[in-house]
Image (cartoon, one colour):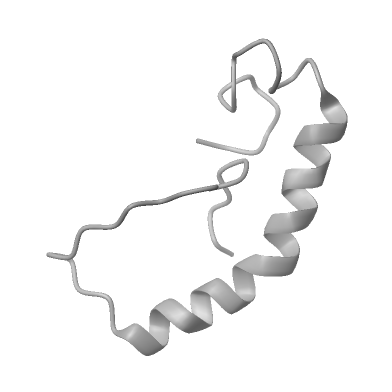
Length: 64
């Protein structure tokens, strides 16, 4: 999933490209929150065998 606005985030009636402000809000949220999320995950020493439930994932940042 990307935040490119190519339509792969939310194709439903209420979200997605039909509401550009929502896409922009999610991208801003990613820029603010991703660095801390990455720091937390690095401290946890996440292992490949772990399973993860991703809730409220935003627009699909690549974590950089």
